[in-house]
Length: 379
Image 1 (cartoon, one colour):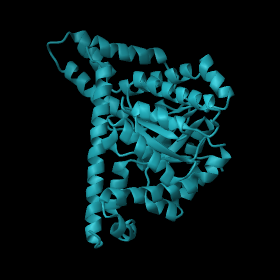
Image 2 (spheres, one colour):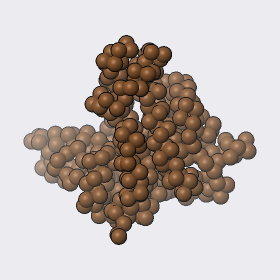
Image 3 (cartoon, one colour):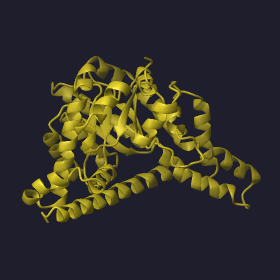
Image 4 (cartoon, helix red, strand yellow):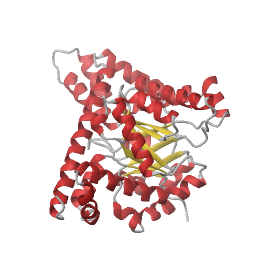
């Protein structure tokens, strides 16, 4: 039997993770089947995913009833639920982790998004979640904000696996890679082991086009702009997200090819893989696998929501394309500058918006837990 399209991606060097978690995935046969048949090699979670799982099902009701009496606060109840899910999912992926020498098979749990601009709070919560999950194949997700960077460095230096989330700009991505390399150097200087520390840097894709396309459409519709500008704006629609990611991957390759990084590799330090997030298509004008296909890359991860996962399984075309026409990628970003669209401003706005969206989702999640607590008679 031929390998599934998803398994073929893994043979090209790209790991597929599931951007979804729900209790019935691991209590039933589904997660084991995805791992065995498709080569699924990891899982990510966030407040929105948990909110839907808790609010839309009764899968968590009994645990909420059991925990609510002693824990009382919705935030503490939720954390207990999330930790249990992540621990069990990590156990399901443990054979993948062992078979790959600790390179894959990870499950991510996220620090509270209200801590995105609080370094000390992020560090304290990351430590607590890491200890509570107590699995070597767990990653704690920390947003790659300015305040997040020192916490990311410190966690990695302490031996905590970190998934850096909400990355949009290449400059911030370079800061994240620097934090990883510096943390590895700090551990080696203290003669601490580095061979099992892993990290991914989650670069968000489709949201970049969602923002820039609106700006490009405004230029294209502005009769006061020169015809050449309007034509350029139309030609750039839908190109920024992929161009930005391809140049981010080029930065990854350049960074880990330096003598500094190569010396660390020789001492057992793993690569910090780029992870493509937000690869589902937001604009119906684009094909459903538009971003996934363009960003097939060795030594990378694509975390797919269930709909995108099933679409790739049905009609994906596995082929490495990350290096396709880097000159065109650079030209696309040059075109934005020519039109007066500041990509650094776009990426900062997207980071701010992402933090707010996750915080709003987290608040909705806590409200869902509070509602469930009342429904099962513990609030």
